[in-house]
Image (tube, rainbow, N blue to C red; front, side, top):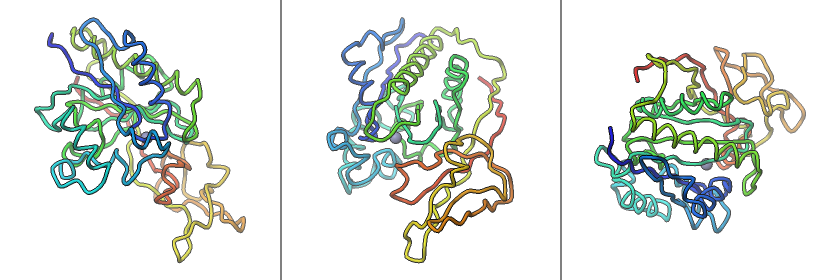
Length: 296
Ligand SMILES: [Zn+2]
């Protein structure tokens, strides 16, 4: 377990999420922050064109361009080209990737605090999330179950991927507490890699964590022409990770009429009123909270 690790911290995968961009600039000015005993992490500004335009993406969400199919097909737009270039520089996606870890930095306009996004099949990333959560007890583990092949995230081209999503912060905006929480999560993640190389990570065996598992996204209320005709109900605004039960207010129409949540079970909510999802009129994500155990 002593080989050098190739670790990349990525920011600006979404060009208007300034926290990650600013952190990468800070790390480039202070590279010692990315040094540990056994490795030095490097940095990547993923979508520089979108960063300079202060928009999420130009043609297509870059963080949806890293499935094997898109990486190996003909690039149809600027983000698909950039994804293929990043895959040449840091991949190739799959077991022979030259990169051990990519830690990708994101922000959300939703009130989600520090969210650690990992894939179900990646138990070492789950270990990292559990370790970071030990150091930052308010952080939340968000658990996706894409197969590696179809996983479209940038961090999926490394052997292990980890996505840090912090909010609430507006698009295009820097806020110190969000910046600092993100930086702390990166520091702990790098500490974890160093401990893991040294074989001295101290986690319970078997591992156990409370995680949130994605169920589905719900649309904003739409009229017959597909136009938005309402918004998140004020009782639900900012209630990320809290419970939502059938019969509780979910949307309020432009007319003031309240729509109630119709669903067979009580769920938890996340990405409530996420600004980045208005392009698809997505209002929120439904999540299931569960206790996960795994072997480290
Ligand atoms: Zn993002």
